[in-house]
Structure formats: structure tokens, C-alpha cells
Length: 153
Image (cartoon, rainbow, N blue to C red):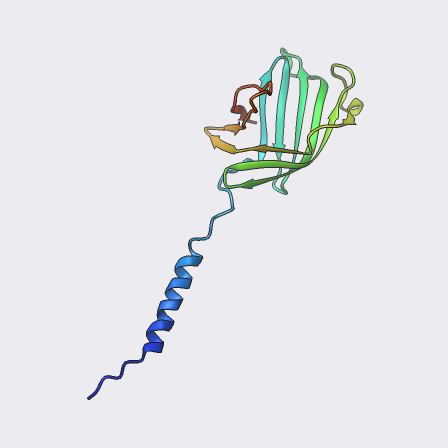
């Protein structure tokens, strides 16, 4: 008996294998970093707090607290907006900023102010109940050291 070679079957199989292999190489744009929740840090008599929600919105606040009772004495700053995580990069966007015209006061005295509409941290990392936000500071900018580290609440 003669074996008949059918090249179309082998080429079709090869095409399926190649398509499958290349589709598996797509870059993963999802993040495996879970930042949902409240995160805070204390600095210079203020408590800085981020709340990242599951609906991809966030709120950040800076307020003074009584060291003995932890009671809120007044608000200095607040921003609200949306966020996205792409790999390790965290971008805050559609930001609305509010500040207190006095040093600090009730949350109702915060007024909308100009400020950045977008902020990007090139790396957001969660480890041992800490959220670390890494950023790049330009050569002529007066920046604090990167990363900024917040504790889970």
C-alpha cells in the first residue's frame, strides 16, 4: 500500500500551533497588586490617608489628629478621582483637589483648588501590610524620598 502525503494537514496544524503560541505571548496588562482598602501614614502632625475602592475610585485626605485621642482636629487637603493599575504602575486621574484656606478646619471648609489632574507612580507594591508608592523626582524638583510607605488600616 502506498502512503499518500497530504501537506495541507501538516501546514494547518503548524498554523494552529503558531497562532496559539503567539497569542500566549501577549503582554499581561492586569495587575496582581491589590491596593483596595484604607492606607495611612503619619507625618509632620498630619495623617495622610488613601482609600482605594473596588470600583476604581479613590480619595486621599490629609488631616490633623489629637495625639492622645486620635480625634480629627481638622482637614488640610483632600483629593478624589479614579485610579488604574497597569502591571506595577499606578495612575491617579480625573483628580479633583480640595484645600482648606486656613491651616486646617472642618471638612466642610475645604474648597476646590487647582492641582494636578493626573499623578503616576511607576511602582505600587504591597508587602506585609504596607503599600509602597515609588515615583521619579525631576532634577530641579523639591521632592521627598521615594517610596512613600503607607500602612493598611
